[in-house]
Length: 89
Image 1 (cartoon, rainbow, N blue to C red):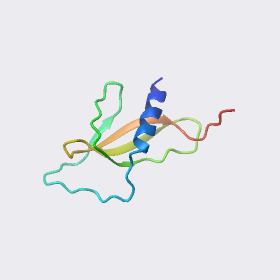
Image 2: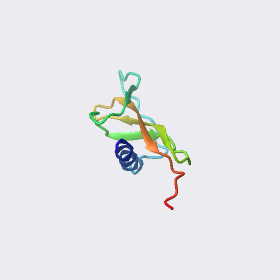
Image 3: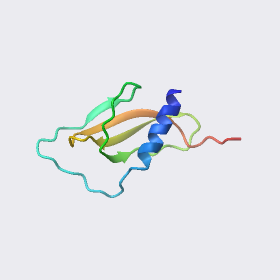
Image 4: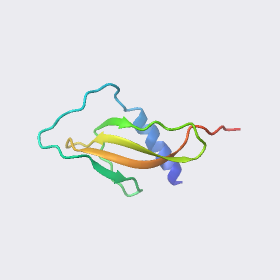
């Protein structure tokens, strides 16, 4: 079940990735906050900055998404998805 949620999360955010966008420099911005996704993780995603490529394997793999929240703070979210190498039969 957790893998299915992570896969849905990955699909949702993959559609919002903005390619070739220059990073925004904010006054007083700290280093990104690194988080591991759990069911109780509250996500405040205003803009997706980048996402890991999902490898062509048939197993659960770790991926990362870097995003900015509604306050302009950068976050790095670690989570797991099913690889893209599985066939349906």
